[in-house]
Amino acid sequence: MSVNSIQRSRAVPGRMAQGRAADRSKPYYRPYVPYLFLVPGLALYLLWSVYPLVYQLYISFFDWRIIPGQTSEFIGLANYEAVFRDNIFWLAMRNTVMYAAVTVAGQMIIGLTLALLVHRVTVAKRFFRTIYYLPVVTSWVVVSFLFIYLFSPGDGGLINFALVKLGVIDRPVSWLANSGTAWIAIYSLGIWKGMGWAMVIFLAALQGIPTELYEAAAIDGATEWQRIRYMTIPLIRRTIFFVFIALMIGGFQVFISVLLITGGGPLHRTEVALTYMFDKAFGDLHFGYGAALSYVLAVVIVVVSVVQARFFGRGDKDLEY
Amino acid sequence: MLATSGSQQRILNIIIFLVLCAGVFIAVAPLLYMTSTALQGVAYVQPYPPRLLPETITFENFEQAFSSRNFGRAMLNSAGVSIATTGLVTVLASTMAYSFARFEFPGKRIIFAVLMGMIMIPGVVLLIPQFILAKSLGLLNSLPGLVLVYSAGPLAFNTFLLRGFFENLPRELEESAIIDGANAFTIFWRIMLPLAAPAISTVAVFSFLGAWDEYLLALNFLTDQNLRTLPIAIANFRGQHSSNWGLVFAGSLTAVIPTILLFVFFQRYFIQGITSGGVRG
Image 1 (spheres, rainbow over the protein chains, first blue to last red):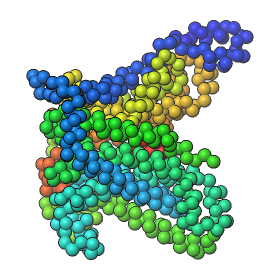
Image 2 (tube, helix red, strand yellow; image 1 turned 45 degrees about the horizontal axis):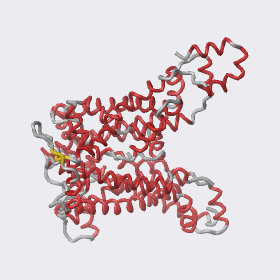
Image 3 (cartoon, each protein chain N blue to C red; image 1 turned 30 degrees about the vertical axis):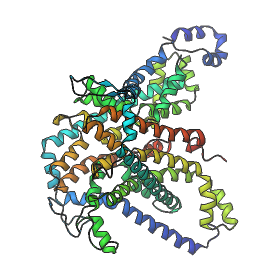
């Protein structure tokens, strides 16, 4: 296809010297070639991601009927009105924000502490990094069941057993039977599963700090804590912010753990945005309502992402001196 | 390092090591407990006191899991779907990324901008329209249909990742190939792809893991018993044998062990993917 132009340039010996410059300005490929590379992937993406995003907006304006034979009725913004008037929606949003706040704080504090320690430890660095990351690669479905078992009622449940032995509680707690204690199980799962992810990113940032900086600080007589507080943390602040935003976005999408551990119950008390969307759409078959709710959540997440992109850029720009 | 004396330093190192070991216990105790429960045989009541290491080891639960017809089937389905998804994502993302990195064509900027914007939209909020679309295309209860949806989701991010990698490769390699008369496909296949192997491996491990663990689409797309994937089969065990946790965890371990092995052996690519931003395990 592109052979012709190259053969021509070969046939003229004088052009060889400028060959490189000429190749850069003049494409060596036929104009349709880029599309051969682009279109297969793009077509799949347009069909299953871009189109659904637009289609969802359309669905959200209808009293959508999924059952064959029934016709969907256009109802304008009524689904959105219903969402914003729905007390359970607001409860679910509050729960979602709480989940994000608690688990993000937990993951960041533990993740950063572990990263500082792993960075500092002299032996088995790789081993620690590998082990802390294991919960991250374990599937949400499996760990959700695992945490139901860990938080079993009765004295045989591991958490009850440990807490009774440590004297934290007097008798076994039925963790999942009411919302307050069920959240403890759900939060712990979120933190336990995500701390290794935060740790790996923080560790990479720490490893990018030149050791000369620390040596200078040590000569100046800075203590370990002063070095962390006044040097390390400021140096990796962009990474800290990046992890914060990424975890917040992840936190807003909490779903499978709540779905499998409490199912949003009892009485919607542990409902989060996505479990409620799921319940409305696939339980009650109110697809229009579910679509409107999905859109509201997507807008919240996009706003958070845009704020990050505008004000802070990406975390990997941290280490420029 | 310099301010403290040698022996103080040594004590600090030991303390750090011990704290990290305590952390290791918290990270792995739940997984250990799951393994021990799966190996302890059929137990309808929780043993008291709970054991992190099994007293006796038996593979009864694993045998029972595999003898249920749907479980072995689910395993094959999951393997097939995950491998197909991995193949499709790596091929499509690398060709797309290459077109953005090395070609000029009308519409390039706008198409790329749309893809980058879409990265912000979490896939899970598209569950409803994807379900309705699959239903109208007759792709419910179809594993190839599931593969298409699985492959589409991570395409934008992976294209972004690979485009960055391709752009950083030196152009001189292609230029000498062009002078030798190679066409765009030869250059892509023979020169660029081998050089991009590390980045493509990163894309591959995350695609595999994503498909292997996916639950919601599989739950809604597949109602036929014979088509179910592993996460659904495990959830079914839990539904049907709710009191036999050993069985539930034997099934769970069967699903988890391949992912852990994948992580341990390809750790480099995981770390690369995680630190390049956006990818979560």
